Image (cartoon, rainbow, N blue to C red; front, side, top):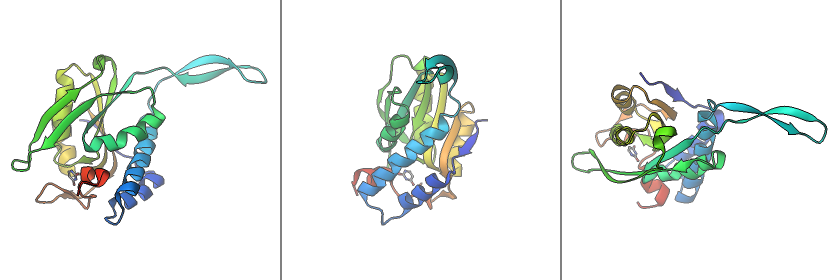
Length: 209
Ligand code: URA
């Protein structure tokens, strides 16, 4: 079964509180999501392999560590996932970015895939699927299945807030996928919103409400 990591660094928790607050406006919301995504990228890249190189400091020659150049791909789920991409790219600037477009059918609440564009070499990359809200898990589940169908081998899922229902769904359907959250909330309400949550992440990011 995939592991769940709650990245509860104090800075992440503090910023998330402002993100949740309904009085936080679009500009500040967007900036905070960007910052939290950057902090989460710091945590999620702890496992990156290092290699040793030789450099000369102004004082002497020395051996020093460098990233071994593991290939990473970020895959935001449109549209709310876009809000976390720039923050992550600040720390992982060489990552390639694919996009998966999903929307939730308002009647059935089922996710529908309407767009997909990925780097060619996804089978060689460690992919990080990004979506701020892991609610029912429907979109993330379908996005991950889409990536696997296209021969992705290593996938992790990164969200701001998860609900136990969404976590369970991903763990059942994709036991090879670890989940990284800034917070694990209580449950879903009758409209499949996460409670306490933060409302509609896409609307709050893009000011469409
Ligand atoms: N999507 C959101 O944007 N918010 C939720 O609470 C659930 C799904």
